[in-house]
Image (tube, rainbow, N blue to C red; front, top):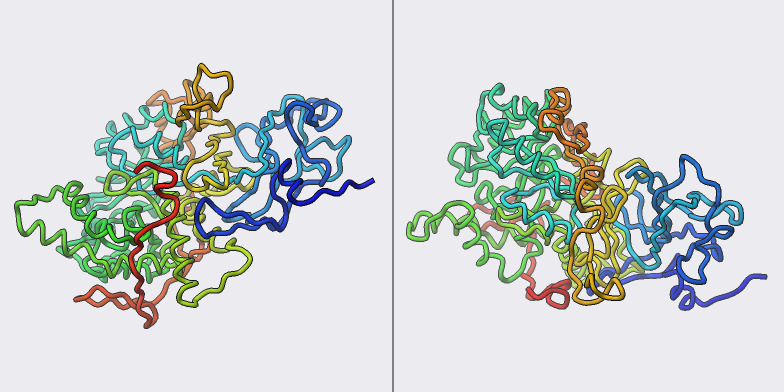
Length: 560
């Protein structure tokens, strides 16, 4: 006969279920589970006196299709799939299905069969999100990669290594084989001659980066886009902050409607003064923000003076250098940036790591911004508090997962938890969501996470510090992580030339994109920017907000 339990009793054993609501860390963001794939009474539970054993939840018959790993009863939060509870099945490093796990010999509606060799990780109350995709990384030091993993990022795309000539691209491709992250290196497009830059794609780059420090002139932009269209790779643009060769309208004209990923469109990180945000008005320009300016806080303008001077070779002793830096820092555009994210006009958040940003903050800053914009919307009456914030949560999650993956032609592999994709999954305890992952799964194996004292009698004994687990060590890394390159590089035999053991996957579908191809961040509002004050109006409405004096997910969790 049926056995009735209270929601509280049920949650103690199996975690929350349909209709239960969860607060994310110490924010005001409330997640509600919309569905649960479990068959109540037949949930898989591992451990002493539990049902994860032969004759119960283990099907004794092994098969070639036996799953390698099942994450049981996790709370799936995915920008494509939505919010629900279910089990995730993994085979050969790929997600093969999400649903109900168990033994069909004794249970109904089993989607994922647990075999005698299937590893089971209990989910319970853990939240599962896709691994983060940081699409603006300066690979200045290898020390940023472990930090990225500790923040929940599993794919890094960027430049910063001086990738010309071709050998300078092959060296870092060989070097990253010790890190359990997916990598895509960009080549610098700094010539208006297409043949001068085309060879870098064949050498192993996944796309181009045009940067004002090396010239963001109209002919260079045109050349990069011409080659990109021919070779199906992305073009990222750090625009001409001094307006020395082109103004924002001329930069947009040079694109001729071709797809561009525009970095830090607020402008403090670099870009047309004072109106770089105009690029958020165009459908073919996919705009992104970097961590230093979101959410807008009281210390942001002052902090940028030092960061900008250090990163862009400015001299405090030269008044013209100081003035140029000050002109680039505009509180009004920082205010507008936050609100344009809420509108969905800025579709991506990335770090600009060590090019002014902090890579471990990519995920955390996104959720701090989501919380700030919720609080602002409630205060102004632009939104009412409903049962949950699921739509908002998925909108902001998309900014560092599926949207950068789509933009850079790698959405077939990463960016969501859809079956068929690489099993890059970040597990979070709700109280530490967005700040400190419980486990970082790379290619179907736990690769990074909090590790206790190796001499202790239990694994979680203090001191607990983040570090590599078995999936993040030795030759295992090459079996779990991939390099993203163009088809031309694969045809040119880059993998064999550098004697790599990694899988090299081709970027595809990076051209002909628009915001309409993205998820939950597709707006292209009409903007008007005051050249004197920097004030921004969207469809006639002033975009203004007060700077934050404090944020959640901060000192309660971290020492700095």
